[in-house]
Image (cartoon, rainbow, N blue to C red; front, side, top):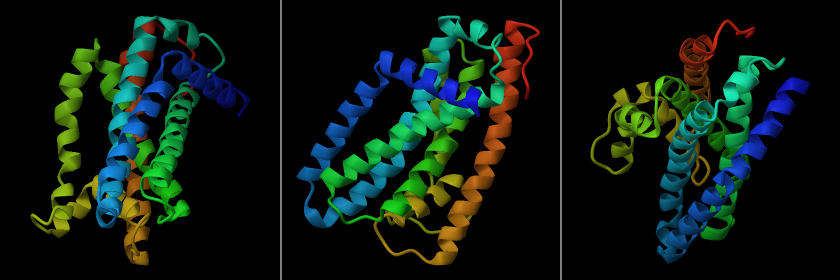
Length: 238
């Protein structure tokens, strides 16, 4: 636990120094202004799409930038000769970015929509959604050699996860969408604003946790293969 807290502290300091908090602040202000200019009756549905895309897109993009920065600055070579374990390194990344996503999502809704949302549902939806997409970005960032390389891979990789959005746009409905983890994420985000059946919420939480666990295993293996293994024969408890 002490190592994890130490890794979390270092992540927060690194993200602050690199300006990630400032970027989140600017993005949050832009989202709030957009919501304030939208007619009141449409703010909740607009907030739904914003809260879904904020931890999904920004967490996915930021984790790529963070890992590539650490690779470029060769800080990982120093990091993994310390007592910290790889799983603690990965979990700290997920926690630090998820906390930012949760705080910004709360203030976006508070000042953009008002007190017409469920705080508990917000916490559950943002934490689970953010964790999944952050972990999804780690194996891609691990094998990428540059930011351009990351975006070249990450762009197409994200396309399948946007498919369930077409159901919310009223284009087509299909039970096939329930196979996508983003469908589970959308259900949880929807519960922030609207009543959702208990069975749907259970599906959303269970399936998204399951998919997050699978992505974590993938992230751990590829990070070891493309990063830790490249550094050398280091002591890393996976």
